[in-house]
Amino acid sequence: MAFLNQWAYIGGSIILILIGLFGVLTRRNLIKIVVSIGIMDTGVNLLLVSLGYINGGLAPILTATNPTNNLNFVDPLPQALVLTAIVIGVAILALALSIVIKIYENNNTLQIDEIRGLKL
Amino acid sequence: MRFRDYLSLFLVIILGFIIFQAFDGTIDNGLNIKQFGEVNLSERTSIHYINKDVNNESTQIIYNESKNPESGSANYVTSIIANYRALDTLGEITVLFIAAAGLAFVLGDHNKNNAFASDASFIVKIGVKILFPLLFLLGIYIIIHGHLTPGGGFQGGAVIATAILLKFLAYKDYKLNHTGLTILESFAGISFLIIGLIGLYTDGSFLTNFLANGTIGTLFSAGVIPIIYILIGIKVGAELSGIISNLINA
Image (cartoon, rainbow over all chains, first blue to last red; front, side, top):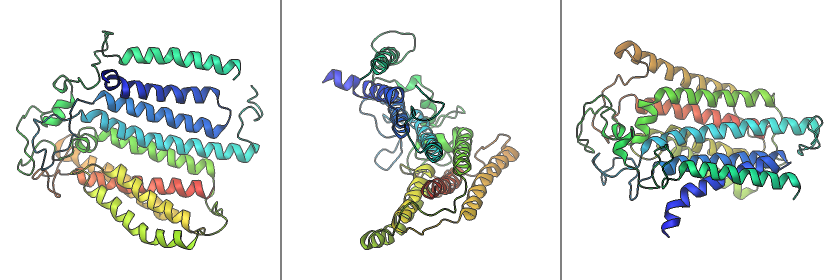
């Protein structure tokens, strides 16, 4: 269990990144490539958040039950950066999907090896 | 699987080992990365955000008692996003705006018909009728309480966009007023800039907090942070709704 506690988050998020990368490298369907990019995005976000985790840490918000700044809060900075990254990820996915829609309208296919000029 | 797939698997596994080594806290790789959960916050910049003493005015912060701390938000993530690193956030909503504009540019005119052939069933329509105002209200609540509870402009804007998406799923003829969305978006973006410029004029630095911070933990506190987060909420909600509308009508 000590191994799982140590590596479940960092190792798991690195595996997610690699799954996404493998999908981008090997899939032929444009939608699947976009989904793979989304999986990579999730992995990077999880990795960043887990770098700021502290054992037994509290959510970095002052409330009536956690009223002072001397408590054991987790690192708020990676969380703020990941909040930024999530929104950017949504924007990237939406833009990628719009380009996929246009490619489908022009070529009537989503397979990249059937699109002219992209013969593999 | 073909040869190329095996090659990709091989490369990905090698890359995985390299990344894994970088984040392995048990070996000394010069990156000073601690083991998972063993982070010492006093060695990091974040301790200044948590103690609100970036300007070396260290005081004890007590919820509902401390008056006029350096950054008045009870939610530390919010105080970073909308106060300490507000310039980053300004850049980020610019990225979101450029992506939304690029999507509208790529997809072209948005006067085409909805992707759905007919309205959804009666139950879905009534359900959306009930859920839409509740979701909208929840989004507004999340935006307004961004400096007190988890959430804020981005999350609340996403919830509002979800409410709009439900409308699109239920009614095939539902249309958004794109001119109104553009006006809302521009208003929010320009107001964000104007708030930054007011800070530059009164206190000498862009996006500084020029209002009184009040008591930490109350709704009317934290100076410009709630105003900036409300503007971000308006902008994100309008932009995500526009993205959804453009994608459904493509």
